[in-house]
Picture 1 (cartoon, each protein chain N blue to C red):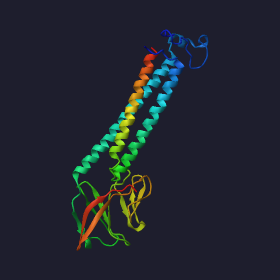
Picture 2 (cartoon, each protein chain N blue to C red):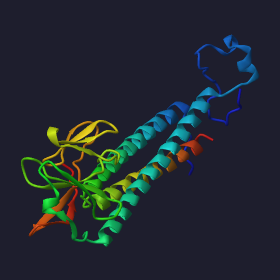
Picture 3 (tube, chains in turn orange, purple):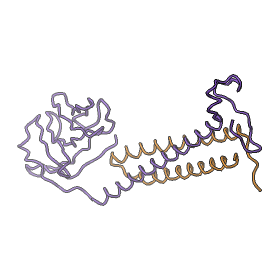
Picture 4 (cartoon, rainbow over the protein chains, first blue to last red):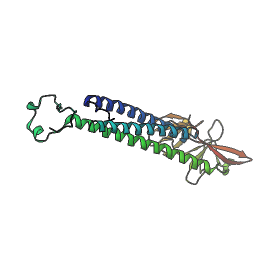
Length: 77
Length: 184
């Protein structure tokens, strides 16, 4: 059974929440990239792949949140 | 105003907060559903952020691939740098190590042992210039400086020390045997 559409105000709240989460994850990825680059240029390669894995997890979460956002968009139409 | 689907609100709030009959004529000529417009803008912003996230991941991946490539190169070769007598006290001897395009400086300060560092500034790879009397290596591009004794940054934008070339003296000959990259 199809879910009833959210009113626009509720949709906006959901979208703001998703935006905040995505923004936090992107900032985390930026920090990871800078820390990894600094360590790599300093000759320390041990954190390169764990950091890449963490970045991949962040990307997957972001894609999931974007898909959810498109889902919210569909409810409103 | 735009016709909305059943179950979705039909009233539109204008950006200036005034009712519809107080809006300027151009808003009636070019009606825009403002809440819907800001909603779409936020959705596009989220899409842009996710693309940024993808770019960051690609950056991480490229560092990983570079680290694999660096590992496959193995240890740098042992290379003869200079005769010990070629460098007077307070003197500087430029050389390239480990590759032909990796400029380095061999320094013999008045006090302390022989030292050798990469000549590329750790900020943006400008060539550093030794200032023996001040005990520092100076980067003229952004006025950074490094301690001559250990290569650590003293001032300016660089945060990482200069890579140190490991030296070995056999008889009267100085050899470079490796490069030590450091984070602190």
